Amino acid sequence: MRATGVGIRIFNQSDNSQVKLYNDSAYTAIDAEGKAEMKFIARYVATNATVTAGTANADSQFTVEYKK
Image 1: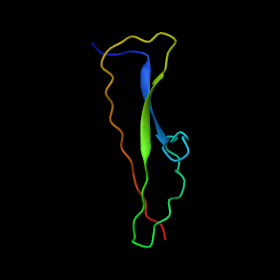
Image 2: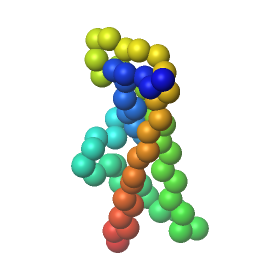
Image 3: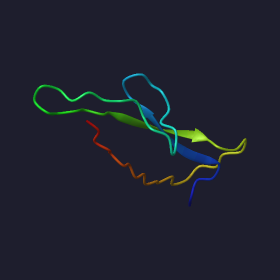
C-alpha cells in the first residue's frame, strides 16, 4: 500500500535550511586538500491535511557545479 498526502523535503544539515528546488544552494568552500563536504538530510512532510500510512519512497537528483 502506498502512502498518500506525504512528500520528502531535503534540508542542509549544517543550518537546517530547506534546499529549494531549482535554486542555487549556499556556496561550499574547498579545503586545502581540495575537498568539499555537503551534507543533506531528508524528512517526510505532510502535503495534505489527510495523510494515510504506507510506503513512501522517493528519488532525488542533484547537480554539482564547480566554480572558481
